[in-house]
Amino acid sequence: MTARTSPFRRFGRVLLYVTMIVAAAGIMLPFAWMVISSLKLNNQVFTAPVQWIPDPVQWRNYVDIWVKADMVTWVRNTLVVSVAVTFLQVLTGSFAAYGFAKMRFPGRDVLFLLYIGTIAVPWQSYMIPQFQMLSSWGLNNTLWAIMLLQAFGAFGVFLMKQYYESIPDSLSEAARIDGLSEYGIWWRIIIPLSVPALASLTIITFVQTWNDYLGPLIYLRERPLWTIQLGLQSFIGEYNAEHALIMTGSVLSVLPIALIFLLGQRYFVQGIATTGVKG
Amino acid sequence: MTTPVVGNQRTLGFSQPEPPPPLRKPRTSLKVRNALIGWTFILPNFLGFAVLTLTPVITLFYMSLTDWNIFGTADWVGLDNFARLFGDKSFHIALGNTLYYAALHIPITIIVSLALALLLNQKLRGAAFFRTVAFFPYITSIVAVAVVWNMLFSPEFGPINQFLGMFVGGDLPGWTVSKDWAMPAVIIVGTWKDMGYYMLLFLAGLQTVPTELHEAARIDGAGAWQRFWNVTLPCLRPTMFFVTVMVTIQSLKVFDLILVMTDGGPGQATLVLSQYIFQKGFEQFQFGYASAVAVVLFLICILVTVVQFLYNKRRDA
Image 1 (cartoon, rainbow over the protein chains, first blue to last red):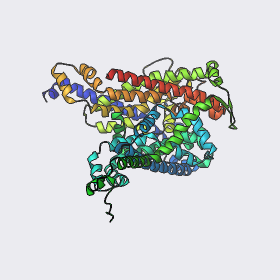
Image 2 (image 1 turned 90 degrees about the horizontal axis):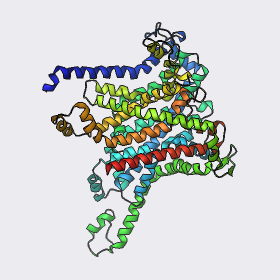
Image 3 (image 1 turned 135 degrees about the vertical axis):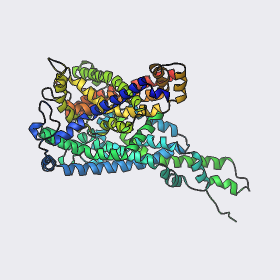
Image 4 (image 1 turned 30 degrees about the horizontal axis):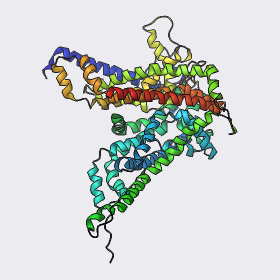
């Protein structure tokens, strides 16, 4: 307590605050610029000095973009894929995690090692054989390809396993003695207890799929199948001089994610922290 | 008379003491049953994982030994693809650029994200807000982020060079349109985007550092720097290991950031391994040769991870 009142200490605190505020402003600058530019006339985007307040404010951009770009299709495709992937990932991930965390049987640890091993294997290294395989099944140029690509990741298994291990075994033991089957224990005991972890996994998976650019780039060649990221990228290429409109599109592509993030921040942070602590 | 079976096999022993059940058979069948149930839990995810990840990884090695063209006919060529890598200038450039990116991105990201985590750990007012801000770039899509940064970096009218122009006279960096500055520009954006994620990992790690150790060090007269170096860092070892492995792999596989920011350019100034695989495979349809490049990327990632793992084990011992 005495330490806090000393002037030297106080100066240190002030310095920390200044650092924090400057860092925050620096980190957010690109987003601020994005939003500001999206409300400008096109020829106002690059000016010297930078015009920080748009005048006049061009709300029109947010109307025009729906006409010039096929946003509705892109958002619909992205939603379909993201919801399907999230559902599959959460379901199979939490199911598998129960096997890894709460049951003992031969082969379990070897299997889990396989999962861990893939952390060190970048998708970029096996995207070609994967593409060949999915193409030979006729899934090239379908949304199915993107769903399959993302739905069975190891991340969901890690996250849920980590969380299940924090639930005391005595609970499932007691349920077992009471005659509940393993599936019953998973569904009636473990799932209700792991809502925070399920929320984390749901949010993280959804955001990841929404933002994915490479998967759709390789598999979705036809315009009607494009996701928001592919659409935005092609829009940037097509209207490359329409800086303000490009920024409008960018804002729209980030907005849903920003909202989800702000609402479910806690789960994001917890999810990442749980997978990271034990490594 | 048949006794009604109550509960599962485990409870059977309690309700039926007589006659004594043969010990071995039920045990093994219980084990088998248990294993089967365990497998059913894992199977739905594992099937997808095995088919979509493990199979392609194994096929990769076969493909790299063939001349696999767009028609899907594979001719066995042995190690020819790998021999070709030695004379391929573009491959050398891609490999060099990947290592360049990694050599800067890994240490900068670790230092910056650790610094942010330490700052947040000071229990300042507004820390929660700052955490949100620092993590935000990580969850935004690469396409939107890249186009904004490209505008910010615009050499003549971009805000960054306008800002720099207030302090430095003469030539300002050309950023993404200059051969020398394109890679630093990409590294800046990469670090800005990723640091929030690693900051969270470090922050979680910092919570495990016992406060008594800090107190004891303080009483012994250790300064802030000494406490950081001798208490915090050693306690953060497991987190540091995990973060290092993740950042390293992430740097070696860097792709979408570069694809949308510079497309490997100008010239081949930012061409990286992942993009070279993409070009050879999906643009020139040389699947066999692209797979050979992919095997190189695969082996580098595995090798680096194993080395880091062994190093960590040795320090642990």
